[in-house]
Length: 393
Image (cartoon, rainbow, N blue to C red; front, side, top):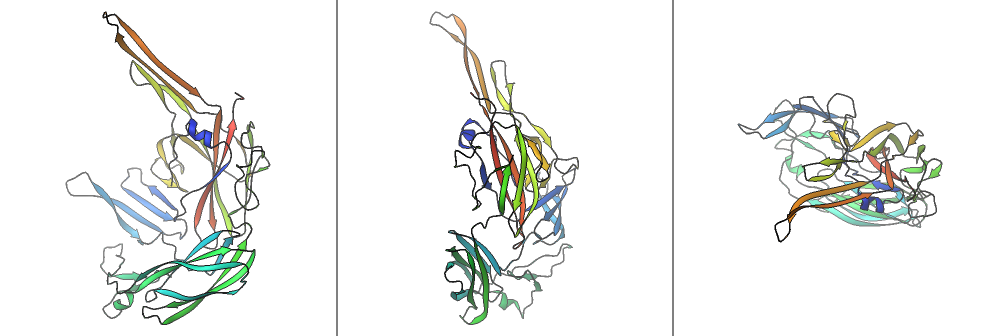
């Protein structure tokens, strides 16, 4: 995941309140490297499957790559054909349906029941016909048997001369759903082969909710951080948290049905310190700390989407839901001083000093929340940043 950049004065000016920032929603993978960096294990949080990799040098050069030595190459792929979908009221949601081999398109898309609740339209497709590129999965032991993996189910079948023609046609379709009114609806569509012949008919149950987000309620020190529709509250200048002078409070998350809370981390920027890079120049640099999230002695791993580092500008603390947390006290700070020699027209030499300093009065504490969609099994993250006013001026 994620390496977080330094919050300067301009960034703090933009983050005068609570923010809810969605992070990358792709499959979440933990990476655990050996202390010498020669091997690592990648584990998908969605599937629970792992693969082991070993560093391999490239000839006589310093270049290298990691070769998979164990596990499946598609360990992180979460095959999912939706039967149920949640949609936010007054919002559009794209639903992608992957096809098995031999299926390339849909037709006869319609709303069977609950027509007053939604509108539907095919918004995209991926159609591949007579694509003779033969996909395969090499075994971890180096054997050369070739397989194809069904795009919709993940099932593997060995490729032979008699069956490979069936693998040439494949694709997917995307359906756009708009939630007009809260309630349940059922949509159906026909799946066709490359010749337009019916292969199957599928149905999807759509539930339109006033709040289809992962979070039912998020609070700090008893004050809500989201509205009833799941949106953040930072645009309300009277909610008390555009600026806060509170030093601490309990952070509590309540998930909506269909979502499970996994982890909460508190992220705090460590601030800056003066640094003399030469006899004539002084500036600031980030204060850093050694970040070893899983406590295995190295700083090479990625845990819950957070990358470890030998020199991290942020501290991270994993907390329990509802724990009282002290907010960060470190504001932004910039300083620069440059001294150099100059001379007048008559040759008299003197020292020139250029100096500037900025001290902010706002500090930020970010609550990084990791959760899972129990319907799709996907893991995701959101963050809530509280900006504290550490001085009145």
